[in-house]
Image (cartoon, rainbow, N blue to C red):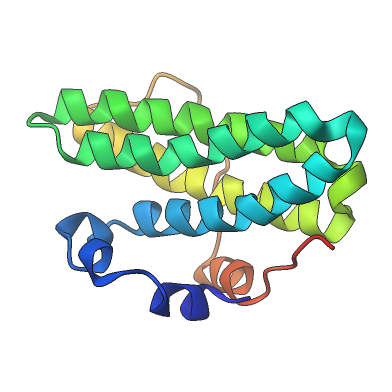
Length: 159
């Protein structure tokens, strides 16, 4: 699976909306579809059934909060929903870490890196919308375009 092949299947009703122009929204929708499969794998293992539900809801919440924030009238209001998305992205990364024994090392590492990219984008957007600084220390959430493209081209799937 690649981001490009996935994108071709996204309905025009979504792709034609101005929201689609936000990279973090596109990536969060892709992450949601990928997590659907991951949650299925986790659900099949008795010890990680509850983790599957938590993971899928957390990943799905990222894009939903970005969409809701995008539709708000002020930067402060948008920033609040983008912060909710940030919390969901971090929660998703946490659940992926906890599911690594079932998902496998390659899949888990990919998802951890992918969630970190979404976090990085949100950490850039939030201060812009708020008109100030983010309320956390400056952390090294830097990824090169090459690293991000690799995440989108080589998406391992759990078996």
